[in-house]
Image (cartoon, rainbow, N blue to C red; front, side, top):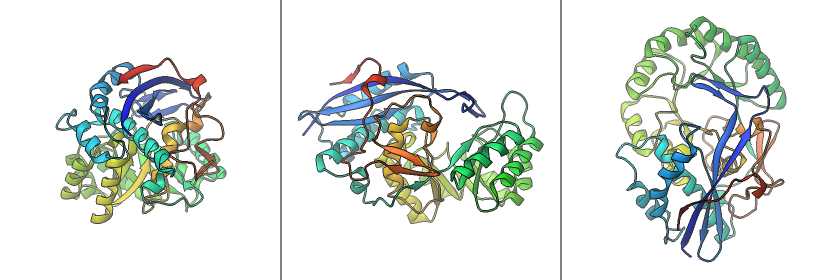
Length: 377
């Protein structure tokens, strides 16, 4: 069995009115990604998903994917280490998310193929088991403290036991007092037992983080990537008591090794697509477990297709915060995955419609896909 063809199918999913995602770098009101199909010479198909960076840069990102994909043609999908080594040769010495996302999309599709060829769900290929779902977190967009508290109360009533709070600059100067008020309102709405992760998305300077975070400690929170770069992360960690999580800085295993060497954070937040796929993500969490670094799972701006793959991973690696990301698909009007397949939400828990389905157990609805774009053959 050899990889014969790689294709992309653009799709656009609009967000439900009033469910737009407001973060420190702007407003997200649609998913404009691409489903990636890999076909083998014996007719097996595997599906992945490409999220471009910047988010409106899909065409350019698909072009960047072509030299990476070309190295995969003719390879055995099960020879995953060799395939990743070939893809890595096309990346810069210090790869960042815009290079790793195409690699991650290919990796997702390869694991889907391997599962189908073996007749096994992907989580079994990874050495995991399915235990009736994965607890999820819900991300609260930047708004007024009152609005964010109301949104939190509604999500906790649905069954979510972990809340990620978006903070940082949005339309104007940063008001640190308002940031504290947001966390206070959310803790009051959530109660004492719900996990709260404050996430400014690198929206603060180190000085601002060191000024404001001590005022939030009474609300018993985790803090995720308030600043850019490992130097500033280490500076913030040394100045605060709340557990600090690396997100944007946790790019791949090479960077994680530097994070561990510097003792820069308490935990990492792993976005599987952004790290280059399941193969790299497994290495990273194995490193975390070996060195006693905590971790949590999260998503990029992805549809139910990539979120399904993520659940296979999250049910394999369990020594995390009791939460997982991947709920962006609950914000969209449309759905790119066929009904009755893949992941679905039951309260605050993500479950698979068919945990025994081979591969990821999800395929795109052709009616939701744009015209085929050949990536490599």
